[in-house]
Image 1 (cartoon, rainbow, N blue to C red):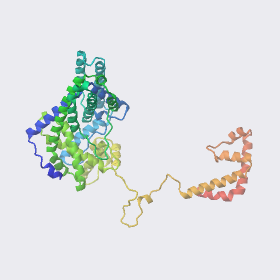
Image 2 (cartoon, rainbow, N blue to C red; image 1 turned 180 degrees about the vertical axis):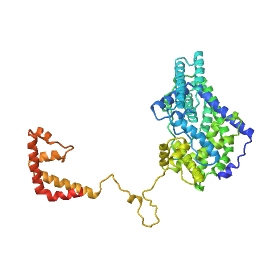
Image 3 (cartoon, rainbow, N blue to C red; image 1 turned 90 degrees about the vertical axis):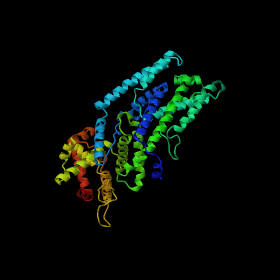
Image 4 (spheres, rainbow, N blue to C red; image 1 turned 30 degrees about the horizontal axis):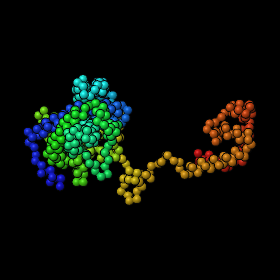
Length: 496
């Protein structure tokens, strides 16, 4: 069915590809320009930045070009195209492996300065009357600062939903006949936007991720008057309606162009997916991962460079499939840089074994990778796989499993537990057979039922006796114990 459906879509020639890619890029830029004219979006951007400082949100979730640690892709197959892509990804991985590297620090310092300017300009916009000329000029400067950020697709759609929530509140309030004229340009635009937003209808059993701006949604739901909405948006209702209609038009155009470019390249996904060693059952999952890579290629393609879109999309489709297969190979998730290094070690080992006929040493692998032997050994140990306790590699039918061959050291053996309990019982009886002073000296000196032992000098100071007198009492008590319980305690000495 999938193959039948994708063959119904006509392929695009180079001119059609370029035109669609240009429309996607221009509409996405138009969406961001429209969002920048809402002071709410600048405030939400500052809020997202503050969350990266205090909560689990990563900077790479809403800004492109910032590596968050797990964003480095991975290729693991050995052909030429994959080798070139792996070299690129190794470079990206090495640049982002250290979150305190100079490259990451420079980007974060630049974002810090941009956020500082955006925050300063937003305070100026909030201090002015929404309908004044100074306010419009300040809002234009705020939009310029907003456009400096390279927003990710996640952030763009979150901001679109944020503006949609405020537009819905205005539409509800405008049911009042006094404000009815403000609802005319909004009502139809809201319906059009609802049909174009991604994931507008959740599947059964599926929950949406939490929005980035919970308090903004709460504030929007609590407003009931247009003047209060204007105060919160720092934007007049007329300007809000005009900008919202422009945002909806750009969003719908963007969705149509993106969907057409996506549908025309679905056959490219199946062509690349067949190059991976997967079963028929896994092929559907692989094509879905390739579709994610195709969507990412559509968002990042630059038509001005003059290349074919299919050439650029091939890399991202192959990348998405390779990353998905790498996740499935390991029961315990490994960082992409570790799996990439492990793939490189395996490829170099195979090459050295073909030329020399011998397995490479750790020093040879470290020289080829330009790293230390400790890192190579750690990577190989990490990719060693999982061994089942119930599995035993033997041809015998009733061979014992690994579980039955490994000695456990967490709990004492039953024999040791019984011996320990019996010794405690005998010692208790022996101590109880002495008088109070003798029992106190023997128990304290040998640490019986106590955390630490005491010397004869310490016992003498405590009991107001000389050290020699304490020694004499102890010798007399031990002689009595040896005479009464010697035969019972000797077997315990043999066991220890």
